Image (cartoon, rainbow, N blue to C red; front, top):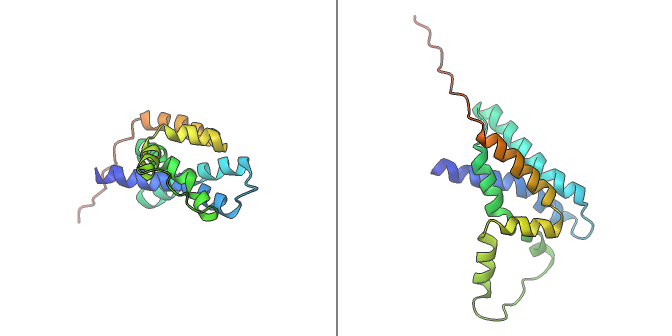
Length: 146
């Protein structure tokens, strides 16, 4: 379970953190093509770093879950840098916003609104296919006898 939570957090952050940085540095003139390329580059970088240091690829199914779970919150995060928080109009508004952000299919809806639907769909299709491929069994270490 700890491994699954780790890959959800790391995978979601590797996908959404570049988007947050671009969105925070270019709030009004962010290029949609750039917003769709940097998250995919973050996933490629995650795979490369994981392969170099651990000699294994990430658990891509859990990475995809992290993308969907962290998605709405991450897409709304750049607006926190430039726009003040809205005042709740009735009790429980913050709870509804939290539930809205934690509902994974909301990622597709918010991505459609801000133009990131292409990178989310590419990641969903690609990581879904990669997660279905069984990983090869680990190679046992070679022990030489003295």
